[in-house]
Length: 400
Image 1 (spheres, rainbow, N blue to C red):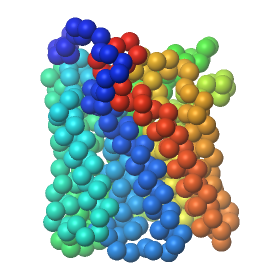
Image 2: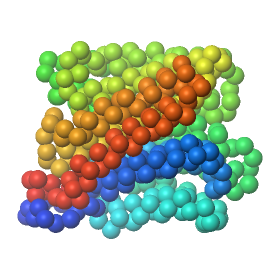
Image 3: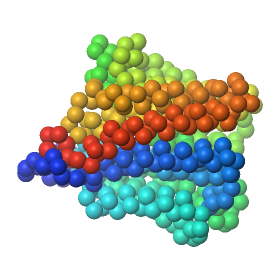
């Protein structure tokens, strides 16, 4: 039996109180939603206006760094600081420690936004977050001997290594390491997504779709995550294209089989399920496109945005919506209408960003503007609906 450190509620929390730091999902989902909208709108406007220079990371570098180490990291922190508490029965940071951790994440974003901040100040602040987050996850996991969850702090520390490579180039300590760092971090984020997806998508599908019987194949579960990690390592060290192409193809097949085992035709009636399965389908498509890109058949940016805007974007939005409802004692099968609209907007944004630039490259700037607008609208709707939920107590008055 796990050690239980969670303090049982002595009395219900009044509904008019603010509890933004009661549990990890609250501050980080709110920050992630706001930053997804603000960060991408800032990037799209700079791209359309042709203003492409001038800050610590460089404009292209800022976009890739902040969507990974800003947005995606905030969502991962939200999920793991909440889920690990449930898996182990041991508290993760809340109250003041959680506020300090969220404040560190926010400080990194604000410092990166301000061009005048020197690198020697920005780098240590930004580099501090992931190791501290890894410790916050590893402590309850190790105390409860929930050994299978040690994969998460390991992947978080690998992300921290990728972040270090980005900063080493930005600080002129090493040359041409940022690209490797971004690719390493991206595939560690994807690895975290597929581990979490394997734990929750079949479960959510079985509970949320009447008659669905998701199939999980143990032999497949043993290879899907290592394939993602190996592909990320191969791309980050610029392994031969035959190697990266083969790994990407194997990853596409393995994850496609995994998703096929979860899928049921009726999932399209249930927004909280189809958004997750569609996001996972974009990961499968992204690996397949990466296999083509490795052989020079398409631009690698097509595969990149299938994995990021499609896979990470849709999975994280769906998870944010569901976890917010579930952990505030609301009905997870009845999302607000505007949240469903957000799912649809994001679902429309992905093919505009991935497919249309491939088919009609001359109009790429238009496709980027349209897809960016849809993305921003989707996350603003999420924040509009969920901000009051995230800062107020659960509807049953219990802590958390």
